[in-house]
Image 1 (tube, rainbow, N blue to C red):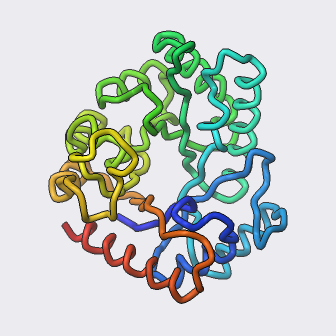
Image 2 (cartoon, rainbow, N blue to C red; image 1 turned 90 degrees about the vertical axis):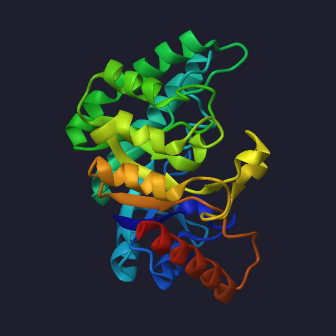
Length: 277
């Protein structure tokens, strides 16, 4: 398994260039990035094209290990507003194009969410339709989609995740297993045996189940109550040997480069300990 860090770990306002360089300094082999809603990357506050981002990866030696299919948590593909659903499709298609241009083979996809006025059955059908609508794009560009639960009030169990993926019914659609996201609702190590080789990517972060299903439950990777030896054993049992990406905040803005690197190095050491289990 190879360790990566997610762009969301960095304080707001941290340039993409700084993120790549901190990741390299801390010993991360990969970084997971995402497009802004407008369809561009930001490097030092300036819009950057694919070539500029590819140059950053080459210059730092940090692989772009994955991408987010746009900010779909803010533009849910399951919205009652058809214009929002169309916007989600546009963002996802642009993300697929950029991922292919950068040589990234897998995109994280949040397929929608349940709301008071969007019942589960409606959200499910719209989410399936949304992913199916992207199938010609991922076939054309040779990209995979990895579906993730992000506390979006749907797909809370591994059986539901497998059923969702099998309902879509395409070999390029799999799961993004996030151990921390599942800890509040069950035991994360129960997921890999059910999903097997449907798992395309893995996210890790600590969680303290004593906090209940609340944001304060998210803690540093090896803190909290997740049984990490069991999680790692379950991943090894299915033969998973891909990217494992940490998703924990490195702290607030206005940190010096030295402080940011120091925290990233600590997180990298946590990852080394995890991957050695």
